[in-house]
Image (cartoon, rainbow, N blue to C red; front, top):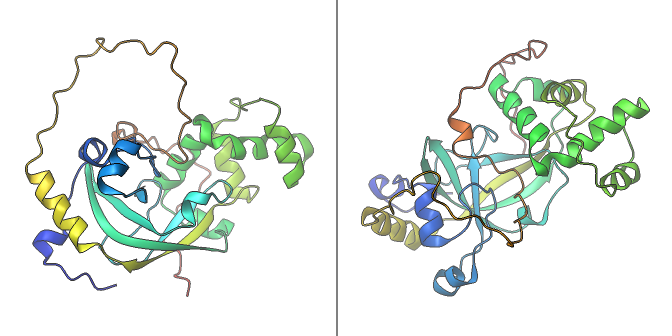
Length: 263
């Protein structure tokens, strides 16, 4: 999709703190919910943020096509056209355009093992520790119990029991992907529009934005009595993804060929 903007405007990047304070939404979520007070101002509830640590084939040039990875069951957030931002470098997020996503065949075991080792490690780590990884952990747990891939009904029943399956490790999940017990769902990403006025607005607002001072550690008030927010699907903490990842899953062969494009 052709982007009718000069590069000096098109390629301006912002950070998630700015987006959260000015446009709303948790700054660590892939599909942040935007509070009504922000919606009343800008009427945009279609934000999608992709971190290359987990989505290495996300668009990296505005208007370019891409692929979106999803280790869980398909979710409603993906079905509508999304205002996509990709994390180009640390704390630098660039608006890519308005994208429509379509599900395609999941990655084969071979294709998964051709992804960079760091990508596979991040997914295994996140799925083993985050609340949103429970579906994957349940599948791995049931597979080990039954000696076969569980049915959808068996997984659904397991998820109703309240067990978070925190005993499932990063190594177990990595092995499950390696052997094809669990697979990575794939969605094609096609740019169908580019909001020129929105990018110009971003450039102007970010140029004049002064970040609020950080609160000293230990001064935040305890949030007693507040209902804990649901942990968002596929969230990858900014702080987390700055840390080096130990490449110690030695049984993963490193691939060299990228996943072929799908028509």
